[in-house]
Amino acid sequence: MTRSPKFARGAEFFFPAESERWLVVLRMGMGLQVCLYCLWLRRDWSFFLAGTGSGLLGRQISEALLAMETSLVPTLSWLVRAAAAAGLGERTALLLCWFVLLGAGVCLLGGFFFRAAAVTAWFVHLCVAKSGGFLSYGVDNFITIGLFYLMLAPRPSAPVLGGRRGRNRPPDPHLLGFCRRLLQLHLCFVYFFSGLSKALGSGWWDGSNLWRALIRPPFSFVPPEFLVSWKYFLPLAGISICVIELGYPVMIAMKKSRALWLALVCAMHAGIGLAMGMYLFGLVMIVLNIAAFATRTSKPRADLQPAGQAAAPAL
Image 1: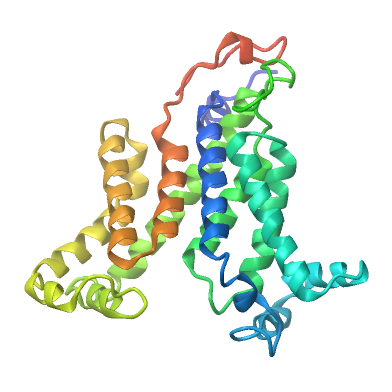
Image 2: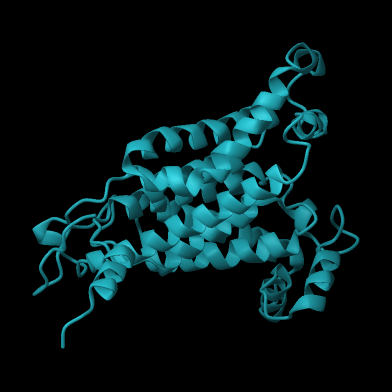
């Protein structure tokens, strides 16, 4: 039975042959992100995530609002109740969650126990993000997204630190390509609709939204006097952000403009991180973009091909 040309083109688009390079970038980048996330919150972990009467706001408020929508999303209370059944107090349970999340990040960074580390990091971080709903922002969403793709991606053939190549079965290059393609499409949707929502309002065209974002505590890292002296630059910066995000799906898809647009996107996130102190947000967005588009789609090495399968041509 012969396949139609449209089916063949669709299969080639969604299942391109990929090497493990992009997955290594994503694994190490997300491992570093999780480690920095834990170290960043180490002093205030219990204060932010403790129950009512012990923390800043009490995670029960966020969890109660979440429970009105669904009871299927995991929260820290699941883990605290499990620890209580083992005779551990809430503070000990929260501290144990911190160590588990940090340990999972270290394993991802080093390449140890890939699948278990990815699943553990995704689940514990999701619990933390949902229980700290009032204190979380975009970085938590994108860390969860990055860990989700890492959790579902094929297991690499060998860890970077320790281990020998060949101990694990080489992953299917077309399955690697499918997972990467989903990440690419996900980012295209995120940037396009983010740019569209900005472009529909007037605040990004006249720079007022940038002004409010840069002077609002705790993101007011740039002195207001400096912003006033550069007030004519704010509309240009706002329009540039709209153009970069709206044009992302088209410009990043074309090989001739991909490197330029990737550099612009990474520079935009680096600027946001430095100007507003959102270092973790800038880092996770740069990691996702580099993993999705910076590493070249290349013909997998013969020793990485699954037995009996020929390498497919790269796009």
